[in-house]
Length: 464
Image (tube, rainbow, N blue to C red; front, side):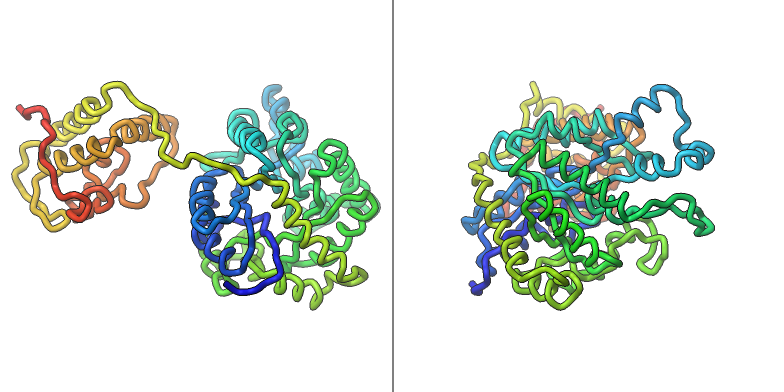
């Protein structure tokens, strides 16, 4: 283990921030262990999907995994919902032209970093992110965001610590939001610096009044245009309103060299190319998991430290440890929690064999090589069904089948990941759309001989 000044990363994205975060919970845990860092928070975009993996990975090293989320935040969401209910055509070019500032605010998601102090905080954050899919879902098609607003956040604030957010947070955005330009690059709306500071200050006062000592000014140094000015302005405002500051780095990858991989992933998610001017990206290679020493070097060697003494930086780093200390180490039962479906074994067999017959594969005598053994479709179905039942996964696969079937009925696309495309039963259930025998795929996770061999004792209905 290397000797480094202690620090806790409180804003980080894992591979659970799909096509945005590069590093896995296990990689973050190993890095914290090697650096001697006691804890870390994963803050995925709008959800908490990495919580189990983070907990298990950090438990291996006796470290604390802090539960968190980078929520989508917009105080105009209730207004948008009312306008929608009233039939206002707020997406039309005419309305947007007449309401330039409101449209710019209402259509853009702000970000807030939220971490949990205790079990109550975890439960409240789950409620917030989950309910937002019903009460704050905004967007079109597959690009929709579960938005939360101030009153909703306050309703479930117990056990939560709020950081003011990245450069897209409400405070930073108000400091940066100076003008609006049309497609011809003409300024159609603008405001003064005084107005920017006034509105940023209003957010600070509002959050401080609601969250007290659990509200922190989040300071970042991502290396984008004018971010050093925003950094210094935030420090000035935090000092004026007596709000403690904290340094974060909005980690999306482990090392600087991983920047290009993350940029490629972002391009894929936006269906464009890395050199496209339309690619929405920070376009800086600073968002890696830095040490405290690297963060200090960034602070001193750029414009961030202008007029700010070194003691302030050190205190902002120490505050990450203070927050981590406030967050209790959770004792989580990480064993699988799969609901039980009545007669799940029989139902799984029924659905799979029914589909096998519908596809005309039940009588097919052709044998295909699967994991070193030649099998027919019927034999492979027996092998997989036996293993699923033996492992107690019948309910799991039925629930997954039901969720995907319902989602597809609503028009949402679904794609298999991991070993699912190698499963004939997943294909028969519709979880996967790929015939694994036809394409020579393997379902090694459940079926390899090293995991117990092949069993053919499931009694399938006779095909007639």
